[in-house]
Length: 90
Image (cartoon, rainbow, N blue to C red; front, side, top):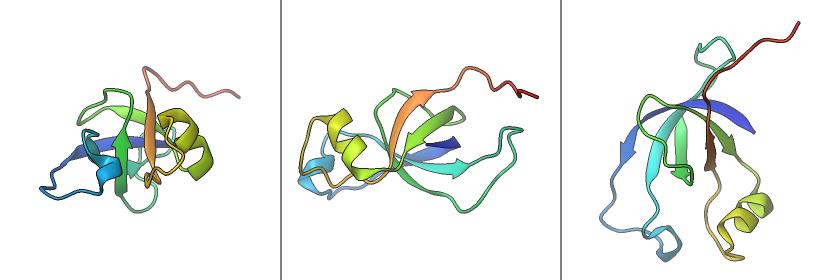
């Protein structure tokens, strides 16, 4: 799982049939302190998140297909949770 911040919506007039009705966002991976970590990428939202939210992203195909209940889903990155707070454990 990856911690990320939602940057904004992605709009496409033509989508793969497996993506119809699913919101797609640009997201930026972040460290626990909120600093950027790596390149941004696209993720399908399954947690009702929005721009500015800190989210948890699943990037494992079989797990995503199980969450979506679609054995043939083309989704590679899925937002599965909105993070309320991050607490460092020493």
